Amino acid sequence: MSKISTKLALYFTIVVLIMELLLMFYLHEKIVNNRIEEELQSIQLRGNSHRDVLEDNYSADTLHHIALMESKTETEVLITDQDHRKIISSTDLSSKLGNLIDRTSSPLDREGEILESDYRDQRYLATVTPFQTDSQSGYVYMFKSTAPLRELIKELNAHFLIAGFSSLCLLVIIHFTLSKILTRPLIRMKRATEKISEGDYEVALPRLGNDEIGELGESINKLSKDLKTMKRDRAEFLASISHELRTPLTYVQGYTNVALRKNIDEQDRQEYLRIIQEETGTIVTLVENLFELAKLDENTFTILKEHVGLSPLLRKIHTKMAPAFNSEGISLDVECREELTLYADPIRLEQILLNLLDNARKYSKAGSTTSLHVTSEAQSVIFTVKDEGIGIPQSELPNIFERLYRVEKSRSRELGGTGLGLSIVKMLVEAHGGDISLTSTEGMGTTVVLNMPNKEDGE
Image 1: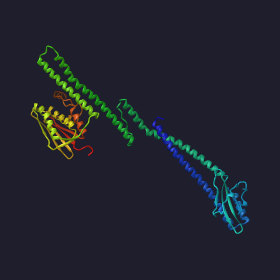
Image 2: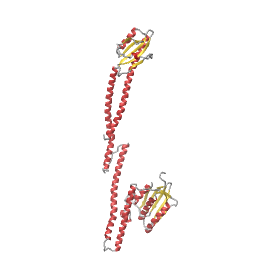
Image 3: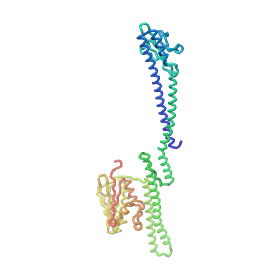
Image 4: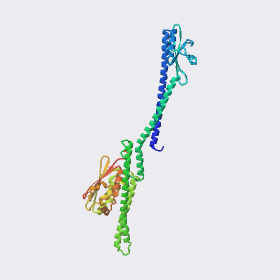
């Protein structure tokens, strides 16, 4: 019983069967009790009717008429005097009465009472009604055999048994059919997840409805697509990493072999060593960025927020970056109000801004200006980094934050880009709860805008 369809069918059948048994038991008892009650009321009414006749006209003819009339029916009558001595009866009941007459209470209500109602163990249902005339007083006993009642109830039991067995069979069929219908989508989803676990991401479940099962099916489809995308991206990422590492390593290996030659000019050797140093720096930067991305992906990095004075931080950044900008003939303009603060991680914030400024420097020309302006809004701080560099084609903008994506890869290599800086910046900004946007015009420059929330966690 490992299949869910079997379990569902079995559980539903058991629950419904219990409910059906309880209902059938209730109905059975209700029908039987009502039937017995009807029989008792019937014979008691007949006894009361005989009482009325006797009280209106008590005579031997009346007694004989009552006895004769009951002898033609399924009921029997016994009329006694006040001392329970027999006056007349429809049949010889002396052997059948047992102790019923002795159980007659005194005084007795005019409407009479029921002497015996046990149809299971007794041969007769019995009632007694008192009568009172000028010349005689006594009791009218009415009896009805319980044998026909037991036969009727026996037939009723058989019908209930047949109905119960038939309904049970029908329930089993219906429940197994419904459980198959209900669990068919679950079985499909199970097979789909098995394929996904085996590495087959070409899973496409059909629409399974508008309920929770349908939503689960759509989630599995989405998971399959996401895993397929991740698999493709991983392959592309590994291929890109291999390519990015292969090129500088080739340079390092090639120029190392050349620099080791004994007959090479010392000036040339120094140039080759400089190239080796540059390419080694590229490899180190790439590896560091990869470690940074790995930590960001696994959420093993920490954001330690505090209230940061932005003006001192930006002066520190300007001091670090100005020599590199000046050496290439680029102006660096930083503008921020003295009192402006931001609730953020100062180390990560500095890392973000250094990345953006370094990007602007790499792709700007001599004589241009790069600016970093900071403004504040209601509950956020806006950082705007704007350069007058080579810009980015519009077709490239949607992919600019993807890992290892670089515009004009040959030129990017010449300028030292790895294609990871903007990915790291985006993830750090989002870790702060902010967002980043980029606009650019080819040949005119690029503008990056950071919107950082300026409130403590939980506010």
